[in-house]
Image (tube, rainbow, N blue to C red; front, side):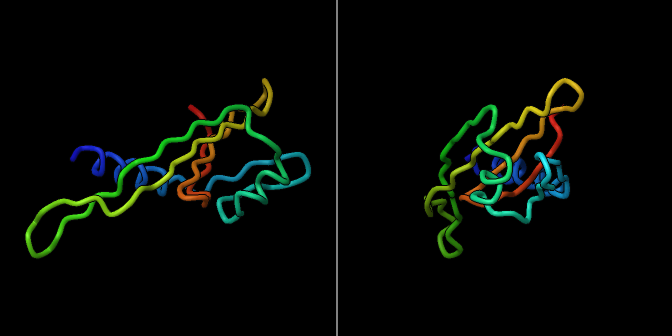
Length: 103
């Protein structure tokens, strides 16, 4: 039961920072792009992680929590050299949800 709450809080925290952009060569990358566009402009990320989580919903009539499906969350990190902090791209179900500077 903690996993759906944690996932929701995690996604909300990423949504608050989703306006970041960064430069890949001659291109500016933003969260409005598609994943294939990101790969075309920036290439493969330095690191990648992927996890699949259950999507749980509460039934209005009975209050029971049931599994509705799954969601895939990928985290890609692009290293930009020694002069700039790496950028972390979060992709949820094949859509870019956020781009943030790694702290």
